[in-house]
Amino acid sequence: MAFKDKVNDLITQALLEKPSVFLIDLTITDSFKIIVNIDGDNGVILQDCIDVSRAIENNLDREEQDFSLEVASVGVGSPLKMVRQYKKNVGRTLIVKLETQTIEAELVEANDNFIILSWEAREPKKIGKGKETVQKRQEIPYTEIKEAIVTVTF
Image 1: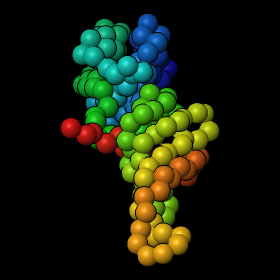
Image 2: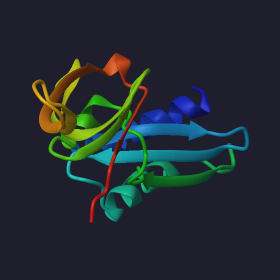
Image 3: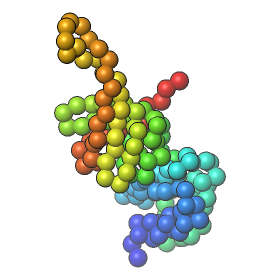
């Protein structure tokens, strides 16, 4: 079994015990540095990272292949990569980059095929001069999203 496959199997086994935690990214460099990024439906706590790290480290033989290991939760400014991440962030504000535009809006719905964003915009009045605030709502398929990041407001 290839080294990456073995590591992937160990991560899968560790996450079976934590159904609310899921793998976002697994990278193994040429120098066998293992980088694991995880996320959770309710966030990730330190113990989740420790448990995944131990599941990998305790089941790999350094005599067979020397490696270094880094297990972390995805950062606040990290782009969303999985549908499950969109679903857990419903109600939060996202910056979504599309082919021709960037939208900063509230994520009001996320299903397996698309997201729905809602925001207010200033547009020229239909009658008369000046602008008015209008409520916008847009359905965006995941295939059209180039990048989406959760914004943090204080």
